[in-house]
Amino acid sequence: MEERCISSVCGSVLKILGLEVPDNIDRPNDAILEMCPRADKVVIYNPDAVAFWLYEKYRNFFEKAESNSCLALKTLSVMPSVTPVCFASMYTGLTPDEHGIKKYEKPVLKVDTIFDYLSKEGKKVAIVSTAGDSISKIFLERNIDYFIFPTKRKVNKTAFKLIAQGQYDVIVIYNGDYDAAMHAFGPERSIPLMHLKQNLKTYNDIIGLIKKSSEGKKVFYGFCPDHGCHRIDGGRGAHGLDMYEDMHVIHFYGVT
Ligand SMILES: [Zn+2]
Image (cartoon, rainbow, N blue to C red):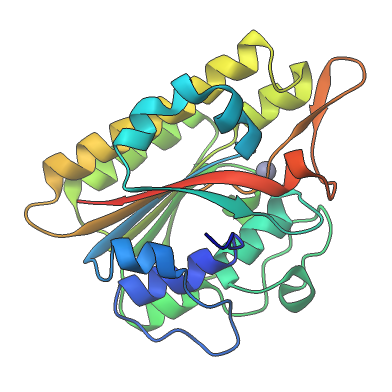
């Protein structure tokens, strides 16, 4: 199967919601559309830095997430493989040259994003994320609702509440705790791996809640990290390079 780029997420979500996909953005991913041609709502969970090699090496951690999903896709990141550059591509459908964030910086994007396309069509959208992080900053100034909190605990509690209430057409949830622990201790130490397991549990909990609250509506959901990671000298972790470990992530997708 052709490996698609994280930038195909934008067009795929628009298409699934029955909206027009602009000509200038990355085309939707056929594998995703075949699995879910159409849905009423979308929930995307964005855990930071979950590399494809982690999925290959720690497959048992991912078992439930995979069985809760319909698709497990090896997905290509963009260069430089750092958070604001990657999420800008994921949610604009554009390359870094096109969207303008080409290094680790978090300006508010000037180009159209999925949040602009969705709000123009009257979709109710929520971003639920931790303060200071890329997703909380680069997509500001759109006609959507922002739920920005200092802690992951509060982010997830709010995200669960919003999913259960069913008021939003699209919910995007960000968790950066694996990334932070991976930078501090290295990708495979016990603390980062505990965070990886927590991220997978959160995804599974999100699916459980979606299934409980979907009320016959079709809800498309995804587990969509931005870039991978690798170990560096001194027992720490990093990403940002054009190397296998940084450039391939695991994405899961499913539908109720
Ligand atoms: Zn990141």
